[in-house]
Length: 509
Image (cartoon, rainbow, N blue to C red):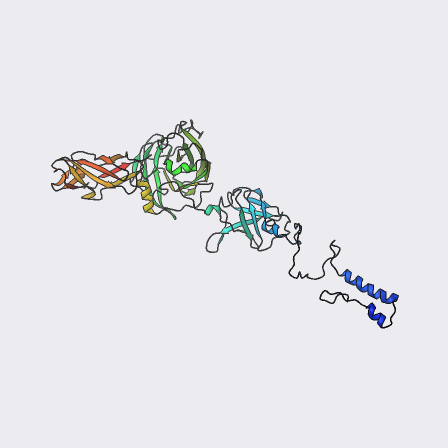
């Protein structure tokens, strides 16, 4: 054995010893010596790669240096390749719902535990598959909660946003966060209609009523706006409009986003989605419109021609200071809750306000109802799941634009005040939130007999109706009532004596 098992070469003969022993050099001993050398050389690894290793090679703490880039699955990788993710990452091909990966080196079969990172070729619109190195396509699933795997929702894969998936022996499981589950800040106020300070209201075209922050649009006649409850599981409240008139007409709802709440979207994408139900099988339209005129001085009645099928400015919509960013259509089955398709738009650089509008594409008959809930407008190109805000927060958001107090029975007090002379009483109301402006419009209902002023002079009926807004700051307002028999500069209380009264102040857009 030329090598002794520990890497030392052992010679067959020793010429010095042979000389001392009187052994002469001869052919057979020379052959034995050189045969031993040949055997040793034959067991060595050559730098030109002529031989393959016959056993594991201990490196003794040393490393291979200046190695080439691996190009096959049976070659070891350079650290640079590992750091660069060269073996499990690629820009995808195929389509948004059928992604393909071409890896180098290619895999020859799927194996449980394989993990791949890829740049999706597009944003998926539903269930999606992944095929790697020309192998069969496998479904991509995601965690659905409680150990359940579910198919992808639209937008879980985003074009040009890296994703990661692991193969479990049957299918791919998405490891990167699914984008449809990302909760974005909802820019719409009162998205379910849970705040309804005005109550059920008969609303003419371009009139606020029913759910706060949303106003009605009608083709010809007034409709009723109201609040609905428990429309379905997960929908405790919804915004409802009812087509009251005997003649069929188109109808819808809209809201205007205050400039301060949406101007950050200039040049960005935004996505609208909602859940709707219609009392007839018909088409519904949703739209995002931008106002480029003076900020917060929006022409709210944005419909130019209800009968036009061209949903652009100057046709269906008004043309002045409006850009129609996007319109989507949804075919509805009667009395069936349905998610609208996500509508993604790019907001213009000159946008000052955004409007969200939805309406029946065709006329609907008397008593057909249109319900909407889970309305959301978010930055980006995925609407994401709907997450309701806490009711108190939603109420405060709405009271920036409208405040109302209702009589709830006999002798309902709504503010304290002070008399001014013998005929006027000013009651101060502290606003729960800073109002949008300090030029509100006060409205009220009932008759003078429904309102009362309580003072040391007794309970006095108002002599005029309605009350007026006498003074206002961004945090408070003075509501003034008039009567007779007061004493100047005395504490008083303003309120209702019956059940019919209400006082409201609007700062709506």
